[in-house]
Image (cartoon, rainbow, N blue to C red; front, side, top):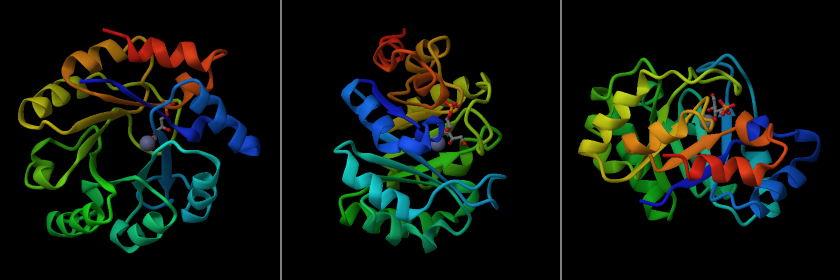
Length: 214
Ligand code: DX5
Ligand code: ZN
Protein backbone atom coordinates (compact mmCIF):
# COMPACT_ATOMS: atom_id res chain seq x y z
CA UNK A 1 0.00 0.00 0.00
CA UNK A 2 1.38 3.43 -0.84
CA UNK A 3 1.78 5.85 2.03
CA UNK A 4 -0.05 9.16 1.90
CA UNK A 5 1.16 12.19 3.85
CA UNK A 6 -1.43 14.62 5.20
CA UNK A 7 0.09 17.78 6.72
CA UNK A 8 -2.21 19.15 9.41
CA UNK A 9 -2.60 22.89 8.96
CA UNK A 10 -3.33 23.41 12.64
CA UNK A 11 0.45 23.77 12.99
CA UNK A 12 0.77 26.20 10.07
CA UNK A 13 1.17 29.97 10.34
CA UNK A 14 -2.40 31.17 9.78
CA UNK A 15 -1.26 34.70 8.95
CA UNK A 16 -0.01 33.35 5.62
CA UNK A 17 -2.03 30.18 5.24
CA UNK A 18 -1.97 30.08 1.44
CA UNK A 19 1.83 30.26 1.44
CA UNK A 20 2.02 27.52 4.07
CA UNK A 21 -0.29 25.31 2.01
CA UNK A 22 1.72 25.95 -1.15
CA UNK A 23 4.89 25.03 0.76
CA UNK A 24 3.62 21.53 1.59
CA UNK A 25 1.85 21.05 -1.75
CA UNK A 26 5.04 21.77 -3.71
CA UNK A 27 6.98 19.50 -1.35
CA UNK A 28 4.81 16.50 -2.21
CA UNK A 29 1.94 16.38 0.29
CA UNK A 30 -0.83 13.99 -0.77
CA UNK A 31 -3.70 15.45 1.26
CA UNK A 32 -4.33 18.55 3.36
CA UNK A 33 -5.54 17.68 6.85
CA UNK A 34 -7.90 20.31 8.29
CA UNK A 35 -8.85 20.13 11.98
CA UNK A 36 -12.31 21.45 12.83
CA UNK A 37 -12.96 21.90 16.57
CA UNK A 38 -16.01 23.29 18.33
CA UNK A 39 -14.97 23.92 21.94
CA UNK A 40 -17.44 21.22 23.08
CA UNK A 41 -16.19 17.84 21.92
CA UNK A 42 -12.66 19.12 22.43
CA UNK A 43 -11.36 22.01 24.54
CA UNK A 44 -10.30 24.16 21.58
CA UNK A 45 -11.91 26.13 18.74
CA UNK A 46 -10.35 26.21 15.29
CA UNK A 47 -11.92 26.76 11.92
CA UNK A 48 -15.23 26.29 10.11
CA UNK A 49 -16.61 25.88 6.60
CA UNK A 50 -15.87 29.50 5.62
CA UNK A 51 -12.14 28.93 5.93
CA UNK A 52 -12.38 25.55 4.17
CA UNK A 53 -14.13 27.27 1.25
CA UNK A 54 -11.25 29.73 0.89
CA UNK A 55 -8.61 27.03 1.28
CA UNK A 56 -10.36 25.21 -1.58
CA UNK A 57 -9.41 28.10 -3.88
CA UNK A 58 -5.74 27.99 -2.95
CA UNK A 59 -4.87 24.33 -3.55
CA UNK A 60 -5.59 21.29 -5.68
CA UNK A 61 -4.77 18.94 -2.80
CA UNK A 62 -7.67 16.79 -1.59
CA UNK A 63 -9.07 18.35 1.59
CA UNK A 64 -9.16 15.86 4.47
CA UNK A 65 -11.54 17.45 6.96
CA UNK A 66 -11.38 16.07 10.50
CA UNK A 67 -14.52 17.02 12.43
CA UNK A 68 -13.95 17.17 16.17
CA UNK A 69 -17.41 18.57 16.84
CA UNK A 70 -20.64 17.51 18.46
CA UNK A 71 -23.64 16.79 16.21
CA UNK A 72 -21.41 16.47 13.11
CA UNK A 73 -24.44 15.50 11.01
CA UNK A 74 -25.70 19.11 11.29
CA UNK A 75 -22.59 20.50 9.57
CA UNK A 76 -21.67 17.89 6.96
CA UNK A 77 -23.53 19.61 4.12
CA UNK A 78 -21.69 22.88 4.80
CA UNK A 79 -18.32 21.15 4.67
CA UNK A 80 -19.24 19.32 1.47
CA UNK A 81 -20.31 22.58 -0.16
CA UNK A 82 -17.05 24.15 1.01
CA UNK A 83 -15.14 21.62 -1.11
CA UNK A 84 -14.11 18.82 1.26
CA UNK A 85 -12.95 15.58 -0.37
CA UNK A 86 -12.78 13.47 2.78
CA UNK A 87 -14.82 14.01 5.94
CA UNK A 88 -14.14 12.27 9.24
CA UNK A 89 -16.66 12.00 12.06
CA UNK A 90 -15.78 10.82 15.56
CA UNK A 91 -17.68 7.75 16.76
CA UNK A 92 -17.87 9.41 20.18
CA UNK A 93 -20.09 12.10 18.62
CA UNK A 94 -22.50 10.14 16.41
CA UNK A 95 -24.63 7.00 16.57
CA UNK A 96 -23.92 4.10 14.23
CA UNK A 97 -27.15 4.61 12.31
CA UNK A 98 -26.51 8.32 11.81
CA UNK A 99 -22.96 7.62 10.70
CA UNK A 100 -24.24 5.15 8.11
CA UNK A 101 -26.74 7.68 6.76
CA UNK A 102 -24.10 10.43 6.53
CA UNK A 103 -21.61 8.09 4.90
CA UNK A 104 -24.12 7.00 2.25
CA UNK A 105 -24.85 10.65 1.49
CA UNK A 106 -21.16 11.55 1.28
CA UNK A 107 -20.35 8.61 -0.97
CA UNK A 108 -23.14 9.62 -3.33
CA UNK A 109 -21.50 13.03 -3.62
CA UNK A 110 -18.07 11.55 -4.24
CA UNK A 111 -16.77 12.50 -0.80
CA UNK A 112 -14.92 9.83 1.18
CA UNK A 113 -16.30 9.10 4.64
CA UNK A 114 -14.06 8.44 7.60
CA UNK A 115 -14.72 7.36 11.15
CA UNK A 116 -12.38 8.31 13.95
CA UNK A 117 -11.84 7.04 17.46
CA UNK A 118 -10.03 8.53 20.43
CA UNK A 119 -7.08 6.71 22.03
CA UNK A 120 -9.30 5.43 24.85
CA UNK A 121 -12.13 4.26 22.59
CA UNK A 122 -11.97 0.53 21.83
CA UNK A 123 -12.07 -0.84 18.29
CA UNK A 124 -15.37 -2.54 19.08
CA UNK A 125 -17.12 0.81 18.99
CA UNK A 126 -16.55 1.20 15.23
CA UNK A 127 -16.95 -2.41 14.09
CA UNK A 128 -20.59 -2.07 13.06
CA UNK A 129 -19.88 0.94 10.82
CA UNK A 130 -16.68 -0.27 9.18
CA UNK A 131 -18.37 -1.26 5.92
CA UNK A 132 -19.63 2.32 5.68
CA UNK A 133 -16.19 3.86 6.22
CA UNK A 134 -13.75 4.49 3.38
CA UNK A 135 -11.07 5.04 5.98
CA UNK A 136 -10.55 5.02 9.73
CA UNK A 137 -8.67 7.81 11.46
CA UNK A 138 -6.99 6.42 14.56
CA UNK A 139 -6.26 9.20 17.06
CA UNK A 140 -2.87 8.80 18.68
CA UNK A 141 -3.29 11.81 21.01
CA UNK A 142 -6.36 13.10 22.79
CA UNK A 143 -7.85 15.46 20.22
CA UNK A 144 -7.73 19.20 20.76
CA UNK A 145 -4.22 20.43 20.11
CA UNK A 146 -1.25 19.82 17.89
CA UNK A 147 2.19 19.29 19.34
CA UNK A 148 1.22 16.57 21.85
CA UNK A 149 3.16 13.40 22.44
CA UNK A 150 2.28 10.21 20.54
CA UNK A 151 0.47 7.56 22.66
CA UNK A 152 2.11 4.20 21.76
CA UNK A 153 -0.74 2.03 23.07
CA UNK A 154 -2.66 2.77 19.84
CA UNK A 155 -0.25 0.61 17.81
CA UNK A 156 -1.93 -2.73 18.72
CA UNK A 157 -5.25 -1.11 17.82
CA UNK A 158 -3.94 -0.29 14.34
CA UNK A 159 -2.73 -3.89 13.90
CA UNK A 160 -6.09 -5.31 14.97
CA UNK A 161 -7.91 -2.91 12.69
CA UNK A 162 -5.73 -3.80 9.69
CA UNK A 163 -6.57 -7.47 10.21
CA UNK A 164 -10.29 -6.78 9.66
CA UNK A 165 -10.34 -3.67 7.43
CA UNK A 166 -8.84 -3.12 4.00
CA UNK A 167 -9.70 0.56 3.59
CA UNK A 168 -7.49 3.48 4.52
CA UNK A 169 -6.02 3.69 7.98
CA UNK A 170 -4.94 7.15 8.98
CA UNK A 171 -3.04 7.95 12.17
CA UNK A 172 -3.25 11.42 13.66
CA UNK A 173 -1.41 12.95 16.60
CA UNK A 174 2.25 13.13 17.52
CA UNK A 175 3.39 11.50 14.28
CA UNK A 176 7.10 12.02 13.56
CA UNK A 177 10.06 10.16 12.05
CA UNK A 178 10.55 8.13 15.24
CA UNK A 179 7.08 6.55 15.26
CA UNK A 180 6.15 6.50 11.56
CA UNK A 181 7.90 3.20 10.82
CA UNK A 182 5.96 1.37 13.53
CA UNK A 183 2.69 2.85 12.28
CA UNK A 184 3.31 1.74 8.71
CA UNK A 185 4.34 -1.73 9.85
CA UNK A 186 1.17 -1.95 11.92
CA UNK A 187 -0.88 -1.24 8.79
CA UNK A 188 -1.39 2.52 8.59
CA UNK A 189 -1.26 4.06 5.12
CA UNK A 190 -2.14 7.71 5.80
CA UNK A 191 0.01 9.75 8.18
CA UNK A 192 -1.39 13.06 9.40
CA UNK A 193 1.27 15.25 10.97
CA UNK A 194 1.23 18.85 12.10
CA UNK A 195 4.11 20.09 14.19
CA UNK A 196 6.62 17.60 12.77
CA UNK A 197 6.04 18.84 9.20
CA UNK A 198 5.33 22.54 9.68
CA UNK A 199 8.02 22.83 12.33
CA UNK A 200 10.68 21.40 10.02
CA UNK A 201 13.25 23.58 8.27
CA UNK A 202 12.76 21.47 5.17
CA UNK A 203 9.19 20.20 4.86
CA UNK A 204 10.06 18.01 1.89
CA UNK A 205 12.74 16.15 3.82
CA UNK A 206 10.40 15.81 6.80
CA UNK A 207 7.60 14.34 4.69
CA UNK A 208 9.93 11.93 2.88
CA UNK A 209 11.34 10.81 6.22
CA UNK A 210 7.97 9.75 7.53
CA UNK A 211 6.81 8.39 4.17
CA UNK A 212 9.84 6.13 3.87
CA UNK A 213 10.14 5.14 7.54
CA UNK A 214 9.98 1.38 8.17
C1 DX5 B 1 -5.31 16.89 17.12
C2 DX5 B 1 -5.48 17.06 15.62
C3 DX5 B 1 -4.26 16.67 14.86
C4 DX5 B 1 -3.07 17.58 15.14
C5 DX5 B 1 -1.82 16.93 14.69
O1 DX5 B 1 -6.51 17.08 17.76
O2 DX5 B 1 -6.54 16.26 15.16
O3 DX5 B 1 -4.52 16.63 13.47
O4 DX5 B 1 -3.20 18.82 14.50
O5 DX5 B 1 -0.72 17.69 15.13
P1 DX5 B 1 0.63 17.00 15.64
O6 DX5 B 1 1.14 16.19 14.52
O7 DX5 B 1 1.49 18.15 16.00
O8 DX5 B 1 0.25 16.14 16.82
ZN1 ZN C 1 -6.66 15.90 12.96
